[in-house]
Length: 215
Ligand code: MD3
Ligand code: FE
Image (cartoon, rainbow, N blue to C red; front, top):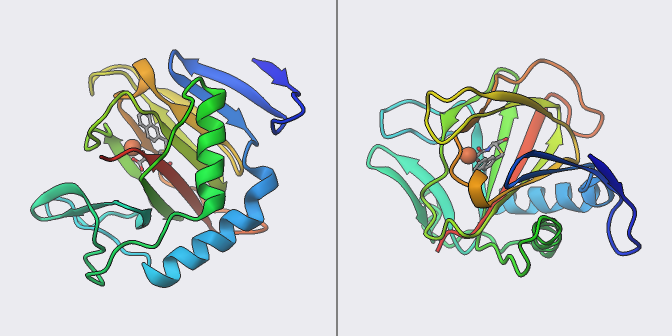
């Protein structure tokens, strides 16, 4: 763990969880207000919805997307789609503040020139969880995924390359940014059920942004 204080970077604590997984504690804090305003703009056009898994279950996490592609799930499977199935229209454009934050975080982790074409926005209300999974619907595993946590803290489960590998638990708090790439890119991960609480800006919820290169 080291404390970085370069003139052109947001000061924050860097923690390496494992090779390829870098936590930037508080990296998003200076942009939180613009990020939340941008989330509101996106969900005004592409409202929160609970997707159905191919197995027929309703996800407890509500989702929306912005950018060229959005991650969707239904009875037929998971995919990235250029259209929002609710409206039949393209997803809202990726806000500039999203793009900037993702690019800067990726660069700090050694992925220069990260240009995400998809941002999945997850909303957790109390009790919502994300079971253990891999993110493997993207074309190029050479590109990292950048995640931004806002609102109530969550316990993140970080496993290995096999579902049965042991998992570490990592607390992710408001403003934390994580870059997952290289050897961490295909690790299993999930989020434990969100505990009750009240965040001063977001109330009883957690919002997570994940930036991806889908195509
Ligand atoms: C590790 N979201 O949207 S972000 C997801 O907090 C997802 O909403 C969680 O997992 C959330 O797919 C976790 C952290 C994350 C995202 C992608 C990863 C961790 C990852 C990809 C590979 C390894
Ligand atoms: Fe994931």
